[in-house]
Amino acid sequence: MLERVEIETFLTLAEELHFGRTAERLRVTTGRVSQVIKKVERRIGGSLFERTSRTVRLTPIGRQLADDLVPLVAGMEEALRRAADASRGVTGELRVAFLGEGTAPALLKAVALFGERHPDCRVDVREVQLSNSRASLLDGSIDVLIASYPFDGMACGPVMLRERRVLAVAAGHPLAGEEAVSLEVLADHPVVQYPEVTSAGFKRDRTPDRTPSGRPVPKGPTGGSFSEMLTLVAMGRGVLPVGEHARRYYPRPDVSYVPLHDAPLIERGPVWREGNTTQRIHAFVRAAADAAENPAFA
Image 1 (cartoon, rainbow, N blue to C red):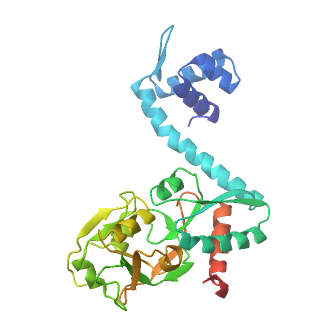
Image 2 (image 1 turned 180 degrees about the vertical axis):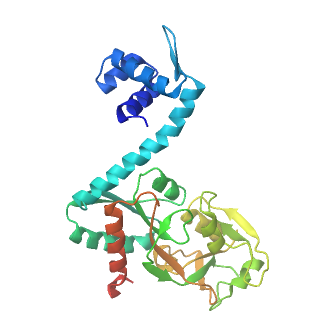
Image 3 (image 1 turned 120 degrees about the horizontal axis):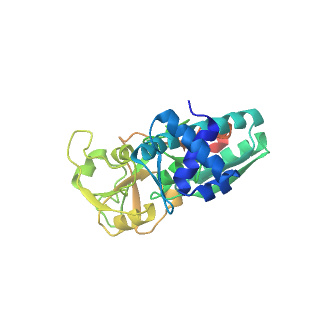
C-alpha cells in the first residue's frame, strides 16, 4: 500500500513534471520529492519518470499508475467530504436548477421549505436548458435539477408534479380544432425532435418512434430549445407532444394545444447525479417530497 504522502507526491509530480514546482506546491525540498519518488519506484520495481537535466516525463508505467490513481483519490476525497457533511449537518451551499418554466414554481416551494428547515445552508437557484442540463449535473455546476422523467443515468424521485399531455400544433393545423386526439395521430404528421443531447429514454417517452399500435412515427426537424421547437410547430414543420402546462407558460397565438386522451401522465421531480449523495441533497429531496404533498403545490 502506498502512503498518502507518496501518492500525493507522485500525482503532483505527474501533473507538474518539474521537481522544483512540485516541491513548492507540497512545501518540501526537491530532495524530499526525489527521495519519495525513488522509494515508490523501488516498491514498484520500475521507473515512473524519465529524468534529464532539462525535462521530466512519465514512463508508460508511470502514466498507467497516474491514470489508475486519479479516480481512486477523487473517490476517497468525495467519501471524506460526504463524511464531513454528515458530521456538520446540512450547511454550506446547495445549487438547484429548473428545466422549463413549468417546473420553477415546484422548485421554489421545495426551496422555501428546505430553507425553513436548514437556515444554515445557502441555496443558489438557476435555470438550465435542454442543451446543458445533463452536463451541468455531471460537471458539478448544479447539485439537483427539477426536470421531467425519465432522465437516463441519474437518480430520480420523488414525483413532485404530474400533468396531462397535449399535442402542440400550428394554429392553422387540421387538428387545431379537435377537442382531443389519440397518440395514433403521430403516425400521420412529422414530430418535431428534441436536441441530440437529450437522454434517449426521455426522447422515447416524448417523441416515440412508433404509436401504441405499432405504426411508425415520421421524424420532423430538431429544435435546439423548447421555444425553438414550438416555433417549428408554429411554422407547420411538425407537431409536438408536450405537457399541458405549456398552455400557461408558453402561450402563443400561432400554436394550439390539443389534449391527447390516451397518453400517460408526465411526471416531474428532482434529479441528481447518483454519486453525489451529500446530506444537503438528501435533505432537499425530502423537502421536495413534503412540498409535493402540500395541496397548494399543484
